[in-house]
Length: 366
Image (cartoon, rainbow, N blue to C red):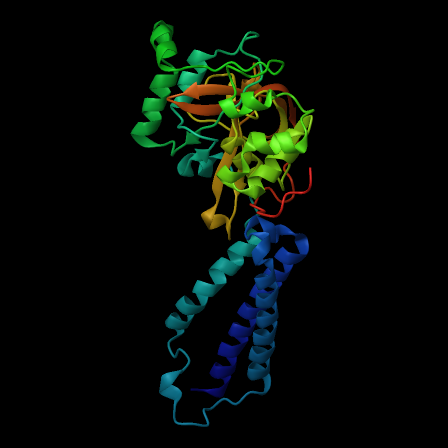
């Protein structure tokens, strides 16, 4: 191969390597890397950046002062492309994603992907939302503190149509639905004999009581059932006048409330996320949701809390809101479903890192 042709190949490769180096450096420097990778993998990105720098330098050196002929009889094993069109196709496979990385803006995941993957609430399924709505319509009488949870599966196809039909069913079906769905009222000022399991009644503390000792609270949350981590975290959360589900606590906090849904009935919660709706939700309902990333956004899953508030329809889908209210416990199909009866909803800006992660760290001393 002509010496100039060899050098052209190495110059093209050098520019491609330099482009990937600059792109990765820009993502790291601007903080946008968190929109693609979980923080625990950022160190590997730093190593990759170092490797890119070395490869770029080596390729430029080869293009400037490197030999243009093989010193061994092995050219056929790793020869450069000799056809111009083949070269264009091969290098375009690298140039196209590089160009897209520079031209296309960073965008956080939202409702369009959540609808395809499904949203995990705290227990249950999306069509249970209809039963929750019929059994406990949004009113002053139903605004007491309770908690519950549900599973929101994929929102496409026949399943979504069935859910929509169920949620928008005629009011005449309300009486039969009430027989199927049991709503468990929670009185935060009572002893909890009708709403808390027997282990709670034995301690003499209702879900809204925050004056219990640490020993009594640990007995309430039964460390032998779910392990010390969630027990410690439950005690810490339970003692807070308002449970703040921030970015660090969001996933572990939801898991804790799922494990101890009856115990957290009536507790006040404040959290932040994007607004998600599924076809068939009532005008008073939306989900405040967050994406959880284990490694990268390709494996992202969605977690959230079902919110009920009279003016819910004024909050646009995918807008970011901060919600505060009391947890309500609904019993649906023998499962406890947590619903957040919001008392305050405010529009906020999306955080710089919009995703949340499991910590699995030792819970701070309550």
